[in-house]
Length: 74
Image 1 (tube, rainbow, N blue to C red):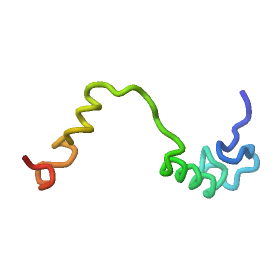
Image 2 (spheres, one colour):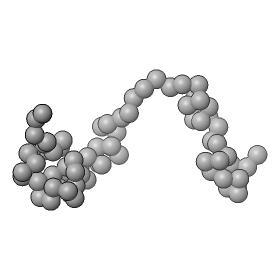
Image 3 (cartoon, rainbow, N blue to C red):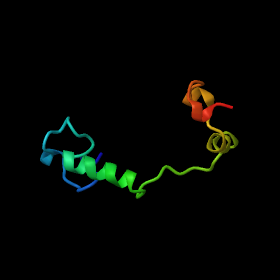
C-alpha cells in the first residue's frame, strides 16, 4: 500500500500540519481548496438519472420541505 498523500497538494502524511484534524487533507487550506472546487463545479458525482431522480427534480417532495412551507403547498 502506498503512503497516504494529500489529494490537493500531494504532501505525504508525515508532512501534514495536524494529521487527525484535516484528513484526508494536510491542512485547513487544502481542505478549503477542495470545498471550493466542489462549490465551483470542478468536481461532480456523475451517474445516469433514474425515474425517481427526474421526478424529484420536477416536483419537490412535501416530506423534504414540510407541509407548512407555503411555497410547496398545493
